[in-house]
Image (cartoon, rainbow, N blue to C red; front, side, top):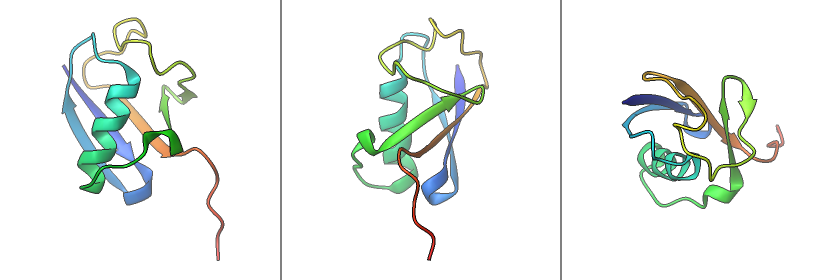
Length: 83
């Protein structure tokens, strides 16, 4: 299935081909690397699905009933100061 992940830090959207066995942690790591073009520490970011924070990123997409084409958002775990 395909999921669409928006990475807020770079205002980019990544379409990923995944299976129901993928975890949210795997999805977050892959999305960050593809959107930013480099290895990024995923612990500094959170992932949201259906507007809610995913608190257990070890759960699989299948266990969360993620449908084909589902949108998700990855954003910094802490608010960024505005200058």
